[in-house]
Length: 163
Image (cartoon, rainbow, N blue to C red):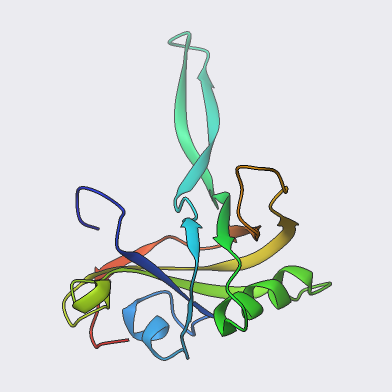
C-alpha cells in the first residue's frame, strides 16, 4: 500500500472466497462498497514459534511455525440501506460455517476518493463474526463493529479497473 494517511481509503466486500489467493482470484468476485467505514481491519499474519533444542551445542534455536491470520475489528457509522453494511451484518450473524467474506481496501485517487485504475489495493479473505453495536453516549454516532478473521496472506497490488 501507499505511505501516508489512511484518509480516502474505501472498503469493498464480497460474500465469497476467491478460487485462488491472488489478484485474479479476488477480481473474479462481485464487490460491494461498504460505506461509513471508521476503522479498517488490521491485516496481517503471525506465526507460532517452534523451539528446537540441540543437546550438543546447548542452544535452542527458534524457527517459524504455522501462520495464522489476524483477527481484528472494523467499525462503521450507520448508513441506511447500505448494501455493503448489510452484507457484513449478514455474514457476522451467520451460524456454523457461514460468514465467509473477502475484503478489498482501495486508496482511491479519483474524484471524491473514488478508486481509479492503478490505485493501491489490498485483498484479504476470511470470515466475519462478532457484530456489536456502537455504545450510545453523547460522543458517539450510531453504528456497529464486526471482526474479520483473515485466513490467508494479504494480497497487495494495484486496482486493475475502476470499481
